[in-house]
Amino acid sequence: MLSAERNILLSLPADASLAWSLWKHVTAQVDARKVVVISQHLHHADAIRAAGGHVVSQVDPHSMLEQVDEVWTTGRDDIALLGAAYGRLVRIWSPEGGEGVFSATMALEWLTRAISWRSPFDGRSIDLTEAVRIVSDDRRAWERTRDVAVCVGMAWWKRERIREFFNVSRKRIFFRHSMYGALSEAQRRKGIIAAWSSRTPSGLKNKAKAQGVGICQVEDGFLRSVGLGSDLLPPCSIVLDRAGIYFDPSRPSDLEKILMQTSFDDSLRARARHLIDTLVARNVSKYGSTADVGSLLSRPAGKTVILVPGQVSNDLSIRLGCGDVSDNLSLLRNVRDRMPDAHIVFRPHPDVDAGHRPGAVRDDIALQYADEIARGGPMVSLIAQVDEVHTMTSLAGFEALLRGRAVTTYGNPFYAGWGLTCDLAPSTGRRGRNLQLEELVAGALILYPLYLDPVTRTPCGPEVLVERLSDPTIWTTSFTVRLRRLQGRLRRRIQHTRMRIWPK
Picture: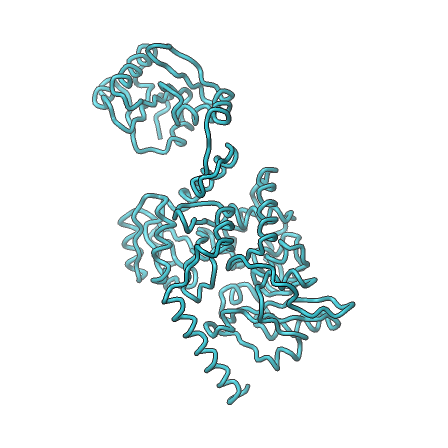
């Protein structure tokens, strides 16, 4: 924080002689004790301090501009542009031309007409609006990660990608295995701990609270990568939640706060609508983009077709977000009881079907309640061919909303309680704001997650990742992934053999 008397900001140029001339010109008019100087080169720093000025180099310019009234520069540099955007009086001075005022209108005209903008992701020409959006997405990533000192509970195959997510803060991120190692590192570096939600060490939250160390939970985002996490494919989207986590309805999460408190303006809703249209047109889901595969289901005439997506039985969203209906079989029974005349399609979870995770329901038992079991084809193609989706907490319910399908929830997923779904589980008591679909998407896919471009390895917005998900050449399969898939197939074969020999 600057003292109240320092209300004039000088942005010194790289040229030492010109920098000193600007300092002398300004301090001939005002007391040097009113002046704070920002300079990457620290020209004449000792002389400026001796005269009563304050000199800074590595500093967030936004925080400086929030505290001053007037800005002086020798040209239209970043500080002049930001100062005009903040509504400060910006004066540009040169020995030859003297003083001139650089207004917000002049800054906007210069930015839109005199500058050619190009995307850092693909080099194409963009306009100022998109450039501002790219910078805003980058700044959001920096703000979310800048105080994280150490990570704990991160699987070995995710660490390189997690490190890339935190590189935006320009700090070296440390990984620790134990609670005590994480706490010690966080205290040493005066930062917080980022813990993978399903691998958080027991007792860490209480110990951290007692020692005054903050924690944020980390989890995959809703647009992740091409392929499954169980195949050891690292995510290109994560969420960092300091309040809770999106799949735990027992307490507020950062996502819930965003959805409850954000004033969604027209530009943000328009961005969300464009994102929805792109996701639907390209058949993009959490695990990538797929081509239209044609008809996957039978559609009996005159019957409502309902998709019931299976889930992993020990998934945290099930354990934390469900009540009486908390497994795939009970979900199927409840859907059949509610919709006795419907054509019900059961889709086993791919991780369960691959043998990586628990939650399998034998086909003969599932078919006592479902009319059809659909294993082939991507989830979004199935959603496009049904009338309704009934789910406990599956992300398939959210993807169904994007595609205009009716959704009934039997648990408390993050997208329930906002007036867009039929909710059968008891309410959390906190959600009650009716949202438009664009507002839900803006919160869940734009404001809440962090995205990393897998090509440039830099922060990006969801639109960039959607483009990358549509390009299969980017996503290569490693030997480790192929070995993991073989392991899953062998485990599933053994599991099915056991079920035939020792049926329940």
